[in-house]
Length: 290
Image (cartoon, rainbow, N blue to C red):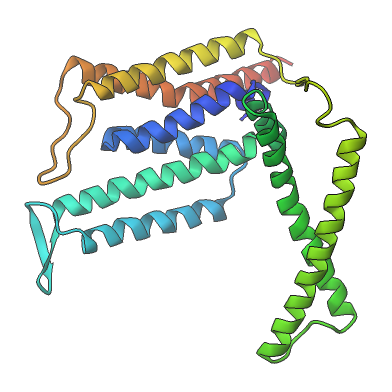
């Protein structure tokens, strides 16, 4: 996603949070379908892997299959498993919930690729400097500790201290790796603490610096996304935007507020998709002119 990669983190954060939250709150087939279509495009455009996509699909399939089996709500039974009815409404609700889960997983998978630790620090630093540095360090330490654990484990294998054996032996070997990793983590923490103290962390008033600038297109995108999200939220609070699954499936009333809500949410979800497609078409056009 070239658009999100070159944009300021603020509009990117607003888009992902608005799309995920509104899709889950509205819980209606129309909004779920729009979000799912946009989420698929954004997921693969941001470098998502097919294996991850299939894993998320499996979670969604399990959700869709389990809900009709455990939910007894609904006035339209289709069949009976023992004395338990499987209703049409429970099936529809399970399918809709499954696609909501699928869409949110795809969106936040793309979010984790587009919003790096540095961008996350930029978003949280103005609110709380201590929380921002803690979050940034946690995001850095998790993969670093995992890599160090693999390194220690490989060294133990070379020395013959880890390998195949009985369960007590494997447990003892794993404990040895854990103790070595804990010792390394404590030493690394002391080094980082001394380094931060040497660089003046916590001394005097903290100044905030960022490489991300709020350009004109970022201001326009932030304003449009905020306006569309606010329009959808206000329309939803006024009623008429969500569907009812129980006791009988009832779509939203065809009122003006429903039309406004649907148009606003479609524009919100499709904005980065349309911008990305326009950017790609422009690039292909320029290449053809060479």
